[in-house]
Image (cartoon, rainbow, N blue to C red; front, side, top):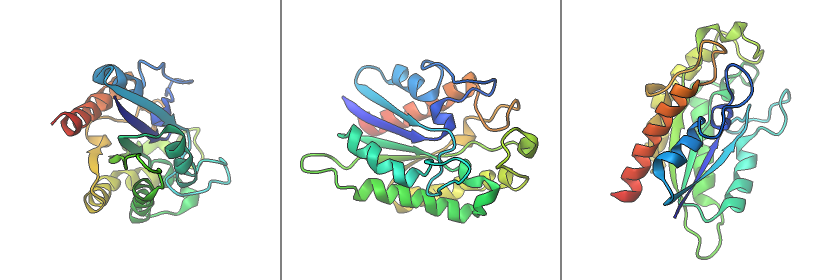
Length: 211
């Protein structure tokens, strides 16, 4: 059995743009489990508001770099870690440029690769998923931390994340190429986009493990 950790934010958690949380068989990690079957074990580790490396005074305990070692330790052995973060780094009060956000993703990759898993435990392969695009109306949404600069930042992340993946020997998926945010809340995916993302991830996972 291949063990795969999905470490991400609210779109990994499955926040429903209509409110609440998508059910397990709708959100993309659950659909990924269904697509891959019993030879794979998909571990969901999504949290709304999670960033790559930032501590958020408005939403405490959301720093990915702080939470990632705990997840690596508690879920090992791991064959793959999927890192799907960056949307929340686009919040106005972080003042982070796209290049800085990409450096945050690089820090997470280095943490996965350098973590002390212990004897007999493998170092997992990394798949980076760059975020779906934030929609233009987000500054008028209920999410006060996003402003008019946030959508443009999100649109610039994919090529930067691709470079990080190349430099860190990671797999890469441009999330915005296969899925989009709902116009209901400008940030979160509906069920069809969760399905599309899961299918794209499944193709990459199968190609890697079953080649």
